[in-house]
Length: 241
Ligand SMILES: CC(C)(COP(=O)(O)OP(=O)(O)OC[C@H]1O[C@@H](n2cnc3c(N)ncnc32)[C@H](O)[C@@H]1OP(=O)(O)O)[C@@H](O)C(=O)NCCC(=O)NCCS
Image (cartoon, rainbow, N blue to C red; front, side):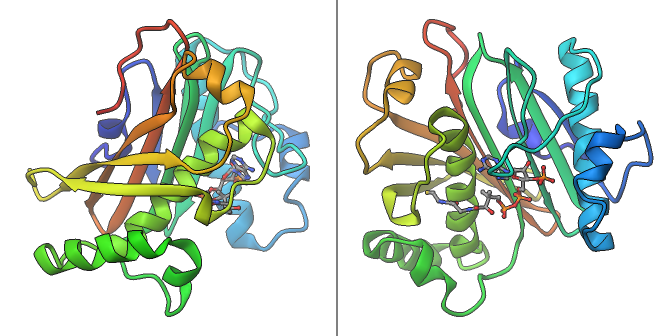
């Protein structure tokens, strides 16, 4: 498949993304046991997500080992590694990086259709809905509501491993910018302002500064993809903007 998530992430990130399922490498028994009682669809997305993660971790130089979910569901990445997994409608992706390069990494994939009725109000701030109305009037072909939802999921995947605390949809204010579409792909960036007091882990990771993060988004091949990275303090890693 055309690499899509790869385009949204800095070069220090190892990304494995697939359409459909991967049959190898085999899961570790401990990994398979965590979804043994799940429905078939869930077992398949979990297995391919883990296989993508294994391939990405190998590219980073990590030895193969079980990647088990922690109590919250977040993968228990090997020491020294940050990462994230996402799956939607036949697309699976895992991205990992050394924590000396990135302090946080969040990715999300969603089908490129509008959110079900009623969901937008539950996941957005009034000022975000006003932004979305303006964006929709100039670019109605982009599912801005789905994009907002996806970007907030990516924010959460950066937030949670650093803080181990919940973050509500009302706790982050996102603003979207659209770039020129190329090769059939709509692309752009999103600015993230966290509206809650920042925990020390996040302040340290942001090198003591305010955490105003910039993520990237893409719409193409029937999907919405979002990615957000937080450079490690003093890493000099490329900011995704
Ligand atoms: C956890 C959550 C972010 C997953 O996103 P999703 O769009 O439902 O599903 P995705 O396929 O993109 O991602 C699922 C993967 O997320 C990872 N994940 C699960 N819980 C996680 C957590 N607490 N932190 C980080 N990653 C997590 C797992 O790897 C999971 O896949 P796996 O179980 O196969 O390993 C979402 O279900 C959720 O709980 N959201 C509510 C919190 C939120 O988004 N707040 C908004 C803040 S602005």
